[in-house]
Length: 300
Length: 300
Image (cartoon, rainbow over all chains, first blue to last red; front, side):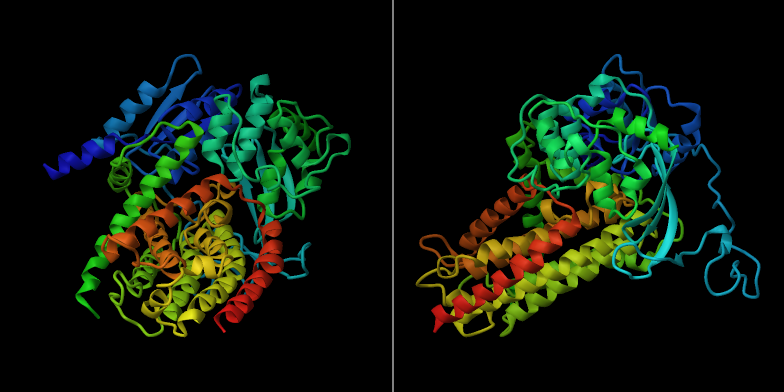
């Protein structure tokens, strides 16, 4: 009785979805979650359903499989081509999962990328005290810090192509020192998106969400102006200044007034190097996705 | 210790439920459909129905220690607050110091939470929270000492007694606004949610699912309860009031502070961490010195 009530309550909660956005689908997905009663989770770990929007290009297939496997089982995948409303399918999948059905198995082998057993006197896997790649995992090494002279450990990671805070398809290889980007390389450009993803409203909503104003971003996507005390002023003056196009703040103000952003595409590696992560993400979202795609194509 | 200690879990759970409901009600202002009082329970059931996600080589001890500590700090913090005039679950002669310790240790709990999954974004959230948490906790101490000055005691029972004539919110007008900054930080909300923000894909909570995520959310909400009760006690006369019994007044005032805190969390945009540090060290800290000096002058 109690167990049945528990499952019934769980099933009436909004589906927890992680979205992998393919070409031409960005604005449709953003609109879907602004209207629908389902939650777009920020990471695969928090989700139960994988929504694959559009045809994912071959180059991102492995990343898609990896995300699928990062969703804790039981999990289900829903495909959406943008034509009809996927909510019915999402709700049905959610109901099945909450009723305790088993869901999909892993797509990739669940082995560590390198075995946790290596050579060396104590099986430590690496050589010496610092650096190297013990157990096939690169050790952090201290590097010059471009910010305040502290020599922090630097580590390299790849972000994308489905990172929710970046344009879909963009893959960056970053060397980070703490939250500071020491060097950046574009390995893949964002997927092409039609004009609707570059509309002022869509661009402003993305920035608002990053500033912690999710419900207001949804309101904007549904067509009404947001009410925030300081949305524009939250962006530091001069951040992402680009000649005639002004800085990120000017662009957000323009978007909120319905004006498209102007100005040339930025040089992405130069834009990101020396930036703190939050600033870097705000910067990449302070240009329309199409401008970032041109910039990424040029930098690749 | 009084039998009132048995009321603590009830108060914490009721407060957590109210906080979670307010979190779902406030977005109604931006056109989201309203959720009934069972909304939080449904979402909680959905979380508990999911498995706990694992990362590669996590720190298993701190994974549970972090939410456990957070929850315990909220419970200890609430325990020194008088629920009726002259009657606290734990009548400490240094209640304000006990609460101050709970505040400071929250930074440790959040850091451990970001440390445990062994992943970059949670760790960035953890470090960033420490950087913001320190300059926020310092003004908090001055604000609370100021609240103790009219009572000439660090006991919260005495702090309440000293507000029989006039509440501290009138005697020390800067106190409550400054303390609200502390509340937003302690509960990882809106402009001060540098630990679990959208730019780092959910940050310290990004790798969590299932019961682990549920426990962390519960701990955040119990801390919101303890903070709101503390603000109501230090500035709004706690259980003092005509007609109704003391606990009812405390509950009403706590709910009011909670609503304001949740509302601010949804309305104020989060700026970049580096831009936030400046007003905290250069604005809030000197302001809290000035506040303490003025409160001392008035008390003399």
